Image (cartoon, rainbow, N blue to C red; front, side, top):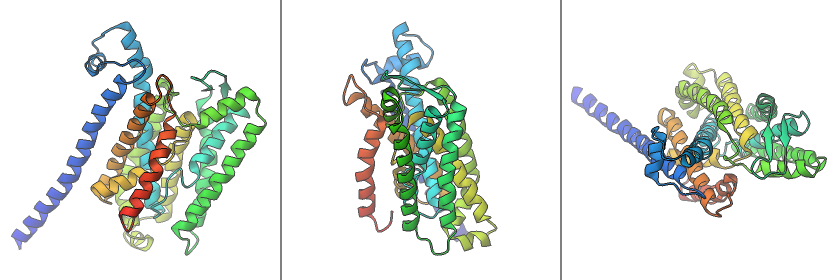
Amino acid sequence: MNSEKGEIARRYREHTGRKLTLILAGIALLLVITVLSISTGSADIPPADVIRTLAGQSVSVTLDSIIWNVRLPQVLTAIVAGAGLAVAGVVMQSILRNPLGSPFTLGISNAAAFGAAFSVIILGAGSTSSQLGDAVTINSPYVTTIAAFVFAMLVTLVILAFSRIRGTSPEVMILVGVAMGSLFTAGTMFLQYFADDVQLASMVFWTFGDTSRASWDELILITVIVAASIIYFTLNRWKYNAIDAGDETAKGLGVNVEKVRLWGMMCASFVTAIIVAFLGVIGFVGLICPHMARRIIGDDHRFLITGSIVIGSLLLLSADTAARVLMQPYQLPVAVLTSFLGAPTFIYLILRGKRI
């Protein structure tokens, strides 16, 4: 009997050890890509010089300025935004028990984009210009974030209301999200219709999600919100595992399903709102990354949350690096690549398995 328990314990340690090894390997790969991403661009910098500069050994004033003021904020923004969108997606898929759940497919990103556009054009929270590099400058980040969050929460509450209707299927919830996304896309178009030429060009440019527009100030604010949300989601990882087994099972285990669902959606919506408010709409990251993580490390949220964060950071950083070099000296918005890559990848995931 003791030998059987010992064998089970050994297999369990090996099982969890493999998952931890995969996560650590992903983190190591992320560090490598981070250095390569910083070194890549219109002005190529040798990776050795990047490492020396980051270590505090100045190579030249020019390289220091490029790395610290241009490349590093953009790279870190891609890492943090990818982590935030991925963790929001994995939590939404769990608490709604919907494999198609994500900020993009549920219309939350579109609602947050409308709120940000509303704050910039109507509330005067931002200034617009005809300069390509800074088409929209957020003067009042808190006003913009609050506006984006309010409209994101409107969609969240509608989705939660439908999720409580008995017999509502995942397909119906996605259709609700598509309808809400279409509604707020129309609202954004309405604002654009009454904008002047400079405002219109600026807002259209802003809707193309891009990490290059974030400075250190925006990066710090985004990082604080994303980090706080990750901590909250990690503390509730056992509850998400219970909900995956069904609402009745979770309630039998003492989980307040309604409370967990409400706060989880609010937190995920807040993460989406802060990212959309400063970077624009970046689609498919929150949808694809959780499924990729599930195929690699399984459904256990003790590892799935961390795995999704790592994969989200890897995906968005890789896409951002590719967008920087594909059409040099011009830089594509990263949202263009994530959409191009996300759609076929998601179709592949559907076709490969009986369930996604």
